[in-house]
Length: 118
Image (cartoon, rainbow, N blue to C red):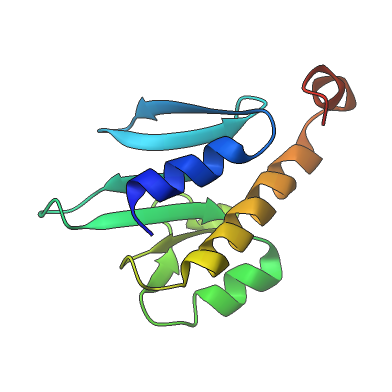
């Protein structure tokens, strides 16, 4: 999945917003909380990586796969980072990012969810 497809999908999820921060990363939030991000971290501009929040079970399963690691700085919070663009299929990335969105929405206050119509 390329950055354009990633941004398009994240933008299609309910009540999301994107900000550019952390050295040019596309950081996707819902209710002010981050659920996914992508950037070209590394020495080469081809080092495009996607990171997202995962459930406990998904975190365990994903980090056992090649080219998927606990996300730097966020791994302890069950975030994963795809080290290559083909670490997962586009369909799987979409499913996991949608799950990340749902995990973050579930942690928002009832008032915030009502405000966002979630």
